[in-house]
Structures are given as C-alpha cells and as structure tokens.
Image (cartoon, rainbow, N blue to C red; front, side, top):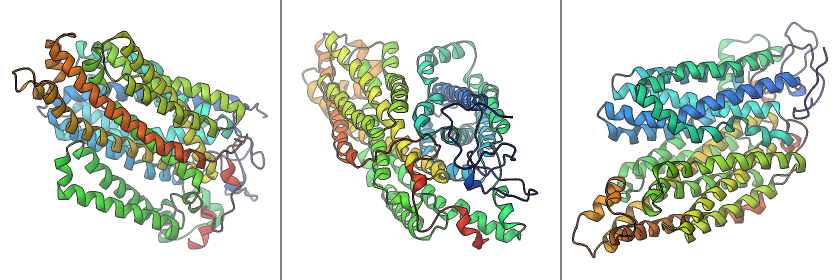
Length: 594
C-alpha cells in the first residue's frame, strides 16, 4: 500500500523497497532481502522510505526518551550528593564523577561500532536494560561500593542511548533536515533546566534519595517503549549475521568469529578506549592541583595514553580491514576542522563554566535561585538558537556560515565576560546575563552544526562510527577545560585573596573564604570593605578564566576556513557517499576473509 512520505525523510537512493523484509544490520536506511527470495537486493542498494506516521513515531520516541534521561541526569546529580553523605563518603563524589567522565568518553566509540554491527534496536534494548539495572543497584545499594557499581552501569546505558538517539535520527532524516531534527531529543532541556530544582526539592521533602533515583527504573522504561516500538514497527532492526547470509551462506564458527572480529574492529576499539581512559583519568583526578601532576603515575598514564592514540591512528590508517574511522575521513581537512572546533568549543566553555555558580554568588551577589537559572542559560539558549538555525539551514542548505558566525559570537561573549567580570551594579549583572545568553546562542550556531557537517562528510555506513568519535572528542574538550579552570582557580585565587585582605587582622579569613565561600561570604554584606576585597579577588580570577576562553577562540577562527561547505542534499547521505576510495571500508570488500 502506498504511503505518503514527508519531505524531511531521506529519498530512496535506488529502488523502492515496499514488500521486502526489513531486516538490517545496524544502518536503519538499509535492509536485506529474505534469504529464501531468489532475487536479493544488497543492503547497499536500498533505502527504507518511512511513512509520515512512522517517521513521526520514531521522532516522538526520541523526544520522550530524551526528556527522560535528560531530567534524570539533572536530578541524579543532586541525589548523588545525599547518597554519598548517607554513606559517610562524601569525598568519594569526585571518584564517582571521574568514573562517569571517563566512561562517558570511552564508551562512545565501541557503542557506535556495536550499533552498526549488532543493530540499532538490539543495542537500544541493551542500553535500556543496563541503564535500569544501574539505577536499581544505586537505589538499593547498601554501601558506597555498590553505589559506584550502579553509577558505572547507569553511565554506560546513558552514554549508549545518547549516541543511539543521534544515530537513529541520522538514519531517518535527509541531510537537509538533519540539523533541525537533531534537536528533537534536546528540546525537553528547555523545560527541564528550570523545573529540575523544584522537583528535587519536592522529592527530598517527601521521601529519600533512594526513591528519587529508583523511580526512574519505571519512568525511564516507560519512556523508552515508544522508541523501541517505533524501531520495531518500522522494521529497523537486524543482526550482524543477517546482512551477510545471502552472500556468504553457512560458514564455520571460527570463520564467523574472525569476520566479527574485523567488523567490530576489536583492536581499534581497544586502542581508542584505552587511550581515552589513560588520558582522561589523570586529567579528572589531578584537576587543578599542580602538585598531583608531578605524580609519576599521572605522567605515565598520559604518556601511555598518547602512545595508544598514535597506535590507534596507525592501526586505523594502515592495518584495520574495517576501521572505526575510515581512512578517507582521517585525511579530510573539513572533518578534522569540525572535530577540532567542537573540542575547542567545549574546552572554552568548561574553562568559564566550572566556577560560574560560585562567581555569580560571591562576585555578583546573585540569589541562589537566580544563579541556578543563569547556569542553565547555556543549555536553554543553545537549544533555542539551534532550532532557529536548523530551520534556516533547512532553507539555505549550508552549514559553514553559521559555524563561523557562531565562533565570532563565542568570542564576543567571552569579551563581554571580561568587561563585566564582577560587581553588584545593575550594569554588571545585566552584562553577565547578556554574556551567558550570548554564549548559549553561539553554541547553537556551532555545536550541532559541526556534528551535521561531520555526518555529511561520511558515507552512510560510517555515520554511526563518526558520531561516536565526535561525541568522544567533545568530552575530551570538556575534561581538558575543567582541568585548566582548576589550575587557574587554585593557583591564583588563594594568593589574590591573601593580598586583597591583608588590611584586616584575621590571618585565616582568606583561606576560609577560598575553602567555604558560601558559608563565610554571607557574613560580609555588599558594601563592606572585606566584601569589596573579595569581589575584586574573584573578579580577577574571572577575568583570567574568560581571557583563557577567549584565547581558545583564536585557533577556532584560524581553523574555521578549513571547514567544508557542501550543499545539503535531500537524501540521507551527504557528499561523503559520493567519495571514491581505493579500498572501500564496507564489509562487502572483506567477504573473502570469511
């Protein structure tokens, strides 16, 4: 039966596939004919044309699950603090966050590869199960050890679903509509950012952190069902073996294992995960304490991580039969530029964002409620501007001009932060608010557009892997930015406070303010000499943080011209699908290995 297709859905690249069984191995745009059918259509030669209803159903599924994991993530950070206090191990919060940060970056590449090899639906089911299992373990944990185990499982499921949502959207949308629809799972953040604080307060007044975390076992499972059902009903599922049975027939077990080994790129994945773990662990544990960087263990970890990175690049470019990052993308200047810009964007943002809440309270005398809302500006205005940019890109079909404009806006926002670095006047406060809003707008011009640009340069079968690498890269940027911010904060603020407070007799006051600003500073109202000295001290550090972030915009501006500027097509594949490689990376070229 004929169905109406929306203009946002990718057009079939070859033949219509109505009536063919919809089994596929990961790429939702491709599926394999039934093995019993005499005429087989290779998966590379067909595309799924979803009806308008199926297309909307999948997008609604991503919207609901995006709302669920987004709100859960905001609330869980609050409940996690209460849990650590109950166990008498509040200091272990740093350990938990380190583990989650490392997993967040390291899990993206293997998840991306598994999404291609195992299948989107199958991996989504696994991610939901792991997410819920981790949540249940945390909610019922009797010790901090079990709480950490639950946190690790939760983070694996959380990381996988973030990737899968982006990949599923890439699978069902044309390049022209990709940017606009990529914001579907992010839209709930515009509401979640404002209501999460009230929800957490209500939960903690009426129950415990255990129920606050545990209730998401039910809520998340329920919110994931529409996405799972939509993927199944659309026939967007399959397994690694189904894609190849029509070509290779029945083979011996060890041959299939060898083929799976190459398709999964086990060596490449292992090197990528090891490199990310070795680099990110010392970055997050050492933080801003320079003394910790003298630890031989930290130096050794970073050195080994860099060696693994070199090994990964060599393996992917020279040895891998089916590489995680295809060779043509390793040398694509436009792709490297887009990845570098997103990494630098997150790095610059993290430099100024890590201590933003403290600066707002101490140096601007904002209320707790207003300071909390201001920290949400980046997400709110980022999604809002991103939706507008996505709609404009749908008409213009170009990405590069918006990314370049976003870099300029980013530099402008940091310049405003330098100018309005502290103060309790109306002008200073309004300047800070304007800078944070502009920073969010700039992110809307840069963040998702660079992702869409990377996807447009990739062949259809490589979109998932490149999305995973992209997400891992910007997590590295955040980790490095956090480290830089910590160094500036811990090395500059204590001595500055000591100098500016030298006029008074309390020799321990500067140290007390540095260690517990929220407890000590309220005792010195705005207008008193001590509060003025404190505001000046925090303002000096804020200038250094904003200036560092502004400096990071310089390489972004320099890299910007290297970005490619393709005209986005009506099909699912971008210009990358038209590339000619000497050695095709698709599995069809490696069937002789099986």
